[in-house]
Amino acid sequence: ARAGGAHGVPSAHQPSTPKALVRSAPAAPQRPSEVLSVAQVARAIGLTESDRGFLVRHVPPRDLSAVFTGPQFADVLTTGVLPDRDDFKDRVVAAVAQNVRVPRAEYAWGPVRDPNFVAARDTPQLPSHACLACHDVKGQKSGAFSPIPPLAFDPLDASARAAWAKGAPPAKRADVLTRLHRRVATDRDMPPEDSVEHELYRAKDATALAGLKEWLERELKGAK
Image 1 (cartoon, rainbow, N blue to C red):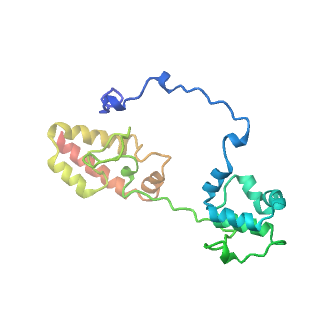
Image 2: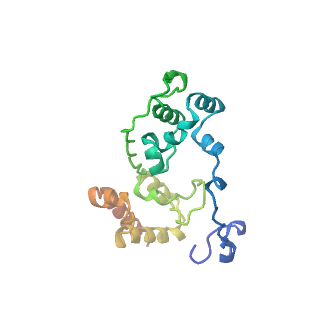
Image 3: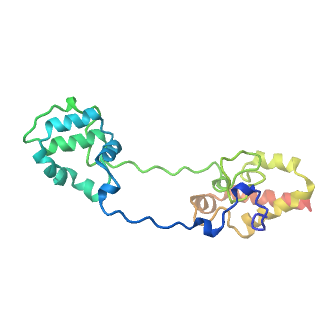
């Protein structure tokens, strides 16, 4: 229905013409200072006026070039990732440690950064059921428009299936069941092959989809 134009999108949100998306490329800046200033870098790192005053007091001007080209900032120049506030000041103080002795409690509040720290990889969160990884369910409010058609009910929720079957209009009953049966049992493209849910519900534990298939075939017999 959506491919045929019945997408339900109001005119104010329909796609614009291709020409409206053409934008002229901005001219490349001649100097880095045209893009980024010292004050912008300081705000990005989180340095306050007091922090900058501290650096002015404790870092001799003659040492500035050596500070930012030395080993303390080598990884910053390589990766382009700016250090946070306390880490930045730790690096500066370490670079001038031979000439300046400053207690860390005087300029930092947070813990010392561990250069060997590696953040733990987030475990992917699976939806409650395979179908809800891609589809919304009709009647549930969604925050944004999705091009993927919503489902009449959660297919892997037995109570949701029973509630829909009890109140579904006879005219639409066979159509919904046939379309869902084709995707689950015939085409076998739900869940998609490249999804985590496909391996979980098709390869490792197919009992949920097997139960759905049996329910669909039983309901289709009754609908016909």
